[in-house]
Image 1 (cartoon, rainbow, N blue to C red):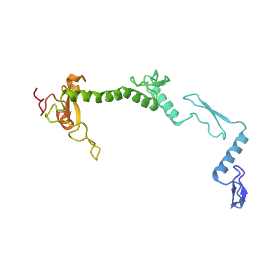
Image 2: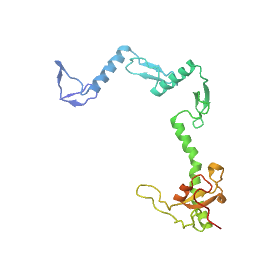
Image 3: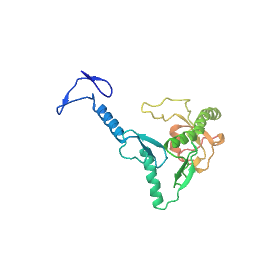
Image 4: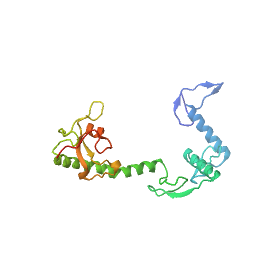
Length: 216
């Protein structure tokens, strides 16, 4: 048993092409090669990204890299292509992180995927509050309509569990817009009525359809 000259790990020495092996793995061998290459070149090679101007050093020298990541390389190539074809490049401040970025899209307000996801979650937050308020509104509409469907007139149960397939049962309670939102209807209680889920789906975006509002 001998010790690896790089990591010090003990291993069973073998001979390769008549030479005694001094490294326990290929990783240690490659690491020693990089150290020797850096020592032969002298100091470390300093790289600078053409996109973000970040600087870093490489211990093994090697081919001089122009970008710190593949994403920055792609962004730089896109910018150069836009300039080549004469596209109008705007400098915009990101609405989420306030970082400045270049774009040719007139409506783009975020700099990347991470900020886009954050903006989407922020825009959905008021809608989550609407769903919480909707449950209280549903109870108010149920009491006003005396628990009867506004389309077929049959009683509407309070709550029904989901089917094994995850779908909603036909008699599940729902709120229907008397004047559909697509036709300018509002979310005011006066424009809402209690209905079965199936009745609401069959009515669709019409004002009457195959169902008639209950009398009285």
